[in-house]
Image (cartoon, rainbow, N blue to C red; front, top):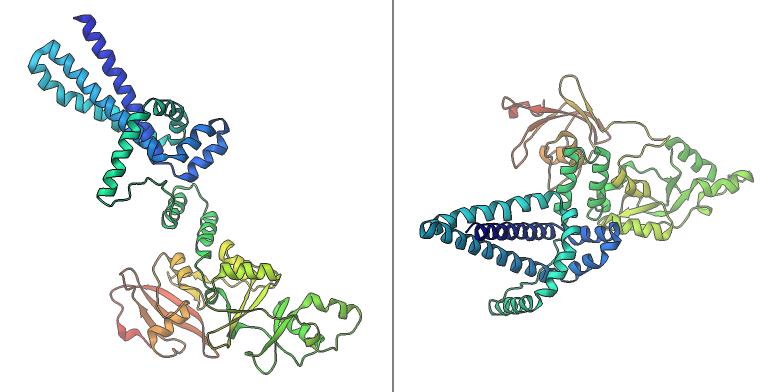
Length: 433
């Protein structure tokens, strides 16, 4: 009796260990995408064969695991029931059922799965060679099971093919946010990754220098006069126009004037040294523009609107700033887009993008009609505001309310604003003061 009890107990322990092994392997495979497995192939070249086997037919591997795990769990329950029946009789059989179920669930499922989730790489590397051998032994059963499953899929018109879980864009963004919150990613790294993700969807009109901020030279100027304009504005490239800004004739590159400077021939018209301009639509995606500018070896493009008029210009620097953030050179005037004040308010440059402002203040700023804070103010006021006017902004989906005060206006352009978080005591009567 003692020997029989010991044999049954050893069998139960072995079956539970197998159950734990199969459960851990199942969790590790389900938690690994194709990218993870390809990375493991590079890291463990001596395991390439087993990892490629997993990539080749994930459904077969998962079927093998499910089949073997089910068999060992049933076997463990059967052995435990037989042991209880032989030792304690029918009463022991009744009591053994909930006990073995609890033991299998904890030690054969929950605990090994939890361990595998935090040790995916190690679990995969250890388990795959054994699973491959067991898969060969279980081939007839696996083939039969897969055939029945495919037949059921046809009957119920369901696609039962297993695909590796690729990481979606939304999931990747969440991963980056979690990495930033946990400290795994620096803030700069987090911003750059977000910039790369959004690069694909950003349009040219979102990053261009608007027409009102363009610096251009008329075609009637001499090289000397044009160089003086470039020097005053700190530009190395400027558009050259004919009758007006909608008539862009070319692009002047300062470096192209060096030959004439050396020869003392600076009185020639600027049209003799300008280059052919690149025109792009304002709705063009920046990733397409980047490839175009790279292919054409140009650093500046003229942006046109749907009516053919010039909407602004965009430079290669503007494209790169979408990824790496603001680039300040020796000619750029250091003007912070947002400055916190001692009284709790914020001085904000009016041309800041609503998306950037939302990130800086951790509060949603949205508008269907505008991309910048100045555009939002114009949309809310319904008229052109004067210096000193105040406007209340309330997010549509709830959140903090903001009092926006116009501080500086120049040539019908809003330049500087003051933002102050507004409490419930703010009333509409404060607008326009």
